[in-house]
Image 1 (cartoon, rainbow, N blue to C red):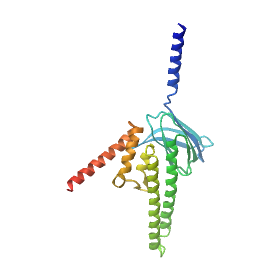
Image 2: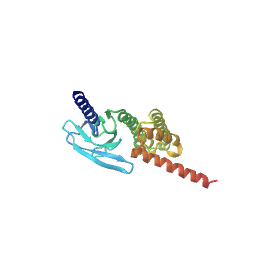
Image 3: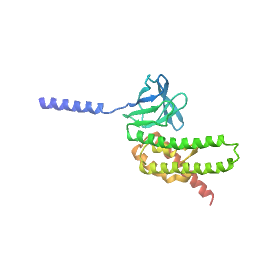
Image 4: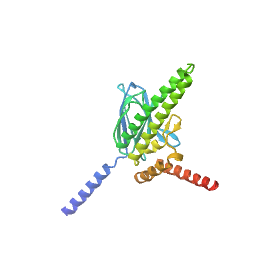
Length: 247
């Protein structure tokens, strides 16, 4: 009987270890300087908007921690009531640490954790620098509107805006080529620089198609991936109908 009992005990132990290895919770913690005692919101980003997940008051040193149960990998907003915010990608079992300034998010933010979370933060850090330069140009034009040389200044500013835009798009294309199966690529494909989307289905359909193929393998039932695929299919259908009508 002893071998049978030992086998049963071993099976139970293995089953117990396997169950403990499945982590349903995600943790986003960190420190945001200058936010001691202030509120911080955690929201889930959805294609139709955002929904509140949790909120907390930062400790006196600006530290915070959110523990929640995501149904699947998704995008989450850390937002202070004044509107400064950062986007974090998180899924089951992820532990992510965020450090930076409470009222300077997303600029200067440092993220450690899963590769996807780090990649997305690197993207926003790069993009926020480009946006800061573009904002400075806009402010310069506003301040010099009544100057005699304003027309010439506008032409020079337009040239600089174009260079910033081209740099941003080149960066996004490089990101997509190197990280097609990264969940973060969904946001890169739909990122707007100012009010204008950088990538578009009309001009950049091959990148949308390649990313969809890679993401469908990595996240086959994820709602964000499925919605993105539906958007691509609808665009291709409308394009086909238009082409047929123009014949």
